[in-house]
Image (cartoon, rainbow, N blue to C red; front, side):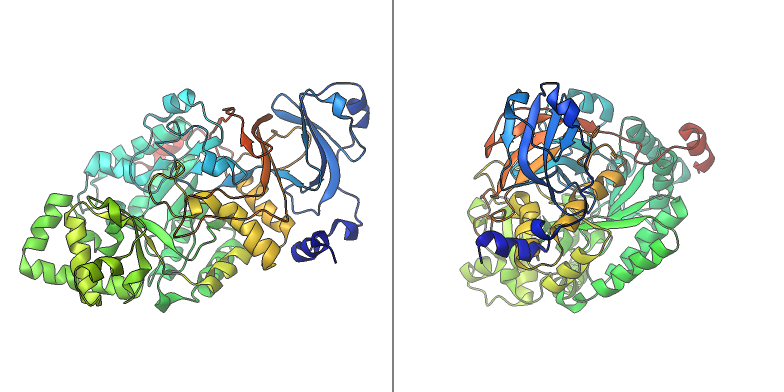
Length: 553
């Protein structure tokens, strides 16, 4: 049996076995009477709807698909031609969450994303800064991918309350609502939260709901990094569902995961909660990245109250013996239950303030070099020392493969990188920044058969497009925007690892965004045709301003 046959069997969609008439627009007369800006010829089309592949040629004029033909088009009828022989032609992938909200203009070609086949990035920020006001920033962008932005709860809270650990007054809450409203009017797709991070973690559910109601008035959606992905993951999913219900807003869980060995297997419960909520008529979706390790700052290793007020306040608390003892006790639970347990090698540094030599090395390495045994108690002491010196970012190896597969197989699960815009060889990124989407298609589709190729493509394309209201993207059909990825189903895979992360994925041959090639025959073209993806994500049925006036405290 040939390699092609083996691949076909693995993805469960052998073209020879597809007897159904393909859902194709026959535009042969048009194809014979004009010259198109761009032709993509000889490919196997997977259109993003979940339908099986079929052989067709695609014609593009300007930024739109104008013809899809099962009859052969002539190369001379295209001003530019991309050969897709032996390749799959699919809608461009939509990354549901990446950390580009304030940096995409600094790396406008977004190479580590483009080489994964990603044509649109959703910057559903969880914490930190955001462009504000949003619209001037959107108007200034000249970048390769399309990019959508959110109004951030953390940003609004910091503007009004700083790092205070308290609830807002009615006046302060109204100011936060005004900030969210301005973001929505500027083009935001919705409101996002990072409830695991300071200072968002100080917010009660009612505060989040009040801001989500503003986004709902403007046709937005609610996207959340949940409050707790470890021992409290079930309650955190319930909180997302409660916000969706009380604010009357579609909700999405970013990077749905189960953290900590004590919680492994809880995806059975969290997925059941999503199904139950959907059965009640709530619009709840979620996404994931295909790795068993997360990546974030050192702040997650500390109780959030200990970080209130910033670095100076933390240092004062640590200097008090009684307060330090309480912090250490709560940190021990975070280490052993919420995160990586007693194995210090499971915390792998990406960047340590003042210690660049520790990029890629582990907390266990640091303990060894200090002459320590590497006990959990040693871990707590080292973590406090590092936080006092400016903190760190790390990769936390704390998830289980079976939960990843279960979440991936759920019909309303989409995909994301949770990645950073990185320069080749710069820093020490999580491999997800380079490999998430190819890893799904290589490891989980081709090699393991966890989901089939058409369903994987649907959840990378039309499902997330519909989620943000971009219904003229995410599908290969006449009239749609020409965001297209062409890849080899036999070779597409990730190459980045936890030890050697700076490796581009392989297998993506061509990428077209708004009708313009940004990757041609595996090489960047330098083109920057990307556009802002703006709200509303859902139809607006009434005056947003009148709606907001009704819900103000």
